[in-house]
Length: 421
Image (cartoon, rainbow, N blue to C red; front, side, top):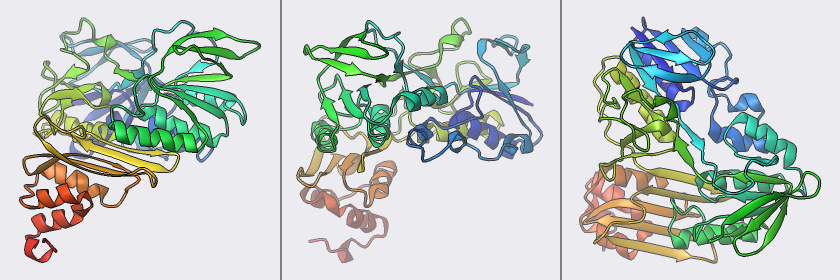
């Protein structure tokens, strides 16, 4: 059996390793279009603050890891696929045939339609090459404008602040991390950043970027303000890498459409990670979840099915955990709540503490936390198990901090001894 995996990120690497484990005699080829060994984009912030070298971003630290597992790595870009002939056309290598194919090509940064985005000094923070460019420009005291305060933007934000730049963040939404946090939590994170010396503009857009004096840039905002910048970083969202699939017959929407085995509409082709429109555990609908835990889960499950080990994908819980300059925030499942559902909220703005729980009947379906790291694993567990909380739902409405008691009472049947009033 010849397995070919297109994409050398976490999803592709985990798929290759899983295949080698469950299908030891197969041929496995892993194709990546970057010159470096497979690495984690989530490690780039640590590279930016010199906490790790480039090698520290690599997903597997030994240079012989893939060779020892008899996994062949090809550094090239796939231009088209031909499902009829089960072949891939590469830009610089010969045609490759496959028996089973996994599309794990991830996503790419979206370039916003803003005049001047092609000027020198404007970068994404998505690749190691981007990281090198940022390190060269983001010197102490330099003026840096970060476009976007979503999940990726906020990961980069801390690294930039630690480089002691003069940082200004521009976010078009009405709060920071608007796809992860509600108004209270998002604005709490904004206030935290401002207290740490970062200038944050929400409900603000960049209208244009122009060349300034020397190598500097002029960033024009829709409120009329003009910012001087030595470096502009764009973190305004990502989109799945599905362009090369045009004309292949594979069904796509926001990503590759799959079933509950992560199999596409073409029998021997699977998808995983940011490029995969997979099942959402909370809603049962199919969507792209561009987070690393989902990528890892997809890679393992897709590989099992490619190897003939029937494995159902139950759906991934939407989960985000973020460290913003020392303030930990997290959200799980349907954190925004549901129509007709109940919620419990606890807020202490002065201490940067916030907890929000969302319920459907007596089942917790979503949660948000800021500044509270204790028992966050329990929050995920309660959501993922769809545990019926019974009377404990009412206790959590009154005091959402009692999540551990609620979990123990309902999983160990000790409700009468758990201090329930």
